Image 1: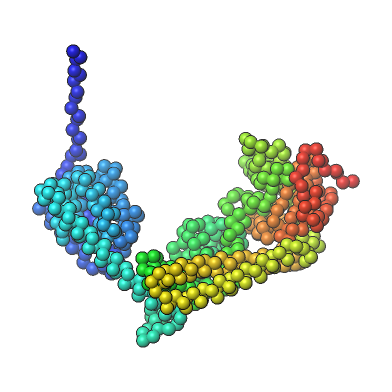
Image 2: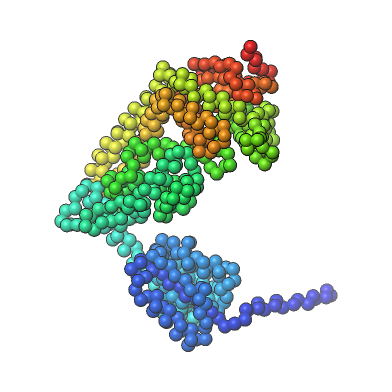
Amino acid sequence: MAKRKNVEAPAAIEQPAGPPRLFIYGRFSSKKQASGNSYERQIKFAHAWASDHGYEIDDKKTMFDYATSAFRGKHRTAGALAAFFKAMKAGDVRPGDVLLVESLDRLSREEEFKAFDQFSQIVQAGVTIMSMQDGEFSITKVRETHGGILHQALGVMTRAHNESLSKSDRVQKAAHAICRAWRDDDWGKKKHRKPIPIGKDPSWVRWNEATESFDAIPAQVDAIRALIGFFRLGYSPMRCFDKMRAAGIALPDGISDHSRVHRVLQDRALVGEKFIQFDLAKKRPDIVETEYTIPGYYPAILSEDEFSALQHIRAQRGRRAGKAEVVSIMTGMRLTKCAKCGQSMAIQNVLTRVRREDGLPHDGHRRLKCIGARSAKNRCTETSCSVVPVERALMEFCSDQMNLAALFTDSDERAKLLATEHVRARRLAEEARAALDTFMQVGALASGDSAAIIATRIAQLTNEHREWSEKAARFEHDLATMNRHSTPEVAHEWAKLRDGVARLDNEARTKARQLVADTFVRIEIGLAHADLIELRLVSKRDVVRVLTIDRKTGERRDQMTVENTRHAALARRTKKQKLVKAA
């Protein structure tokens, strides 16, 4: 007979020393509630209850969510209650501890299943929920009432959710009415205009009760304009902040990182427009309009043309210089490519070695190399070169007005194609706008299933109108850039920056970077010859110049204009295709 092994009983879970603790959670849906006596009432009750039942209050775990909705579950994912659940999972909240709330609806006003799941997690963890209005909820109470207390809890959650749902319905219907009044400038019997209670207003405006309109806040407007100005010059958001601090300009309120900068720069509130989108129509087919665009709602900071140009610049993220010690004027924009393999070229600055007498790094310590050389598969075998002669040749070439004008000749297919696409985009935007107006008029009279179909079509037409309008603005900006960058003034701007670029002045190099981005669509570097570099410049109008320059000095040895973009001069060279050194 097999000998039975002795099985040791599992050790009891050691509870931390000290009496059970009392945690307090409060939540206010609005600032108005926070200004009342709810906070004092809960604290006073908590101290009295703790004294009577032998609990101590953990002040570090006294949690309040201000102006936070429990209907959408925001407090559960990003509020103070989320921190409580995190502490509970980490073991900082122990079985026997108590969570005190004013009412169960403070914990959640979400749909019943979500609310009950949250309630169950707390109770099953051994934590007692003490409600000032609804009583005690714990595992012990559930057993004593044979589950009856769970029905009570579920009833409270259902009532709370239905109340919030009804309130949300009323608020959104009222908001629809205000949006229509602003859009149509028709207030009916109402004597006074009111701000739309949906979404946040920008930080540079405030509501004026006397004029019943928004006023610009001068200091904030100046800060926003300064931010946009530095951004247009080619600085990244964080470098814009540095420039503003150096100039003694306070940062705009609520803007502290690059994501918020981009959010503001693409906000049409800059041109005075407010855009509101509702999700109520998904549950309410009788509501046809889901989106409202209200021009002139805010005082405008930018014109439509300025805003369109800003969006064009914002979309070209590679053109902005980051916090590099030396700003590159031609890499990092998906612009400069290897002539052999077609992959991007990158710059490697070795600035820790011994420098020249003038304090600048030696030319050989700033290298231009193909990123394909680092690939494990299909590795590019092209050599590297100093970037200094390439920059010198590029700046010299573009400083000559005749060379620059030749890159923007009028008789080319690129300009014609852009002009055609611009006209087409404007036409399709106007057609979408006309169809949208028609469906809006029909939708006002529709009901039932037809109203839902019309609402879907309105949303589609709104997106189409926005997309075609943005495309038209981009084409218009490209055409304007072509015409602007062939003028003598721009050639003079190139010439002024030459010395600064050579001295590694980041101010000059940042401006030069913008000129490069506005002038060229592609720059190819050919390094097949030991003594020469082939520099292939393709302008915004697909005019191609091929420069042959000295590999050490950047002196131009030869140049060729290629009118046909499929010319053999633009084909990727192989090792056997050597450049012939000019006499």
